[in-house]
Length: 298
Image 1 (cartoon, helix red, strand yellow):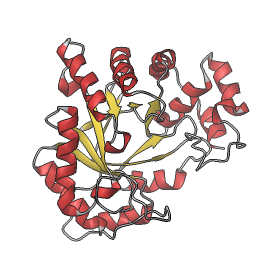
Image 2: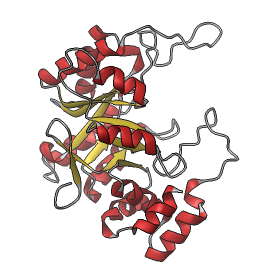
Image 3: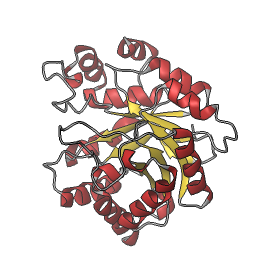
């Protein structure tokens, strides 16, 4: 960690801010809102912006970044921007065009981090989630080692500073790490991670290979009805988190974010609520004790 404790050094020498702003939004959120809140997040102090082709709002997020550069709030090098390669573009020949499309939408010359969104290939084409006439997903068969080589070329071409993966388990990571002729290791693995799914084994594996774990869903999963049983408890209402939050006069959300930072995890805070965006940046104002950490790990 750097002296401010606000960035972590990646295995390729670049630095990633430990707190990131997540831009994934449910469909009911308008694209103009993505523009507004991203601008607000940068004003509030966020310097790491996490987005993806899948989110279909890179144009607005790019506009927000560019407007904050234009008004002198930040310089381009102050911003750490992540985009993700979607599953319909995992064939090696589709990788660079996909990144170039994101760059065109963003109107940026490069991204700071480009990652494979999911270790699953889907049928190439316009549809983000291609399905057959029975509504079944149409998969594609791609060797992710070849996809990775195409990402390495994008890094060499200067289109992205760093390359990584997302939603990979340790076996899928190993496949890339053990690839003959590997040029660059993944700098990160972005996965769902919170006190109800703390990924301790995967975190240990990543640390042993100098790969940073980036946590999404850090405040609890998105509770998308197709994925999550609505009767499951809400993380932010958890009694352990609530008690610790009370002790420090902080919110359970801040405790959940602080927990990740203290275990060496880069954490994404996704909010489209201005009051909470401002609140989330206060994660650097307090520290949890080893006892608190142990209680949350439990």
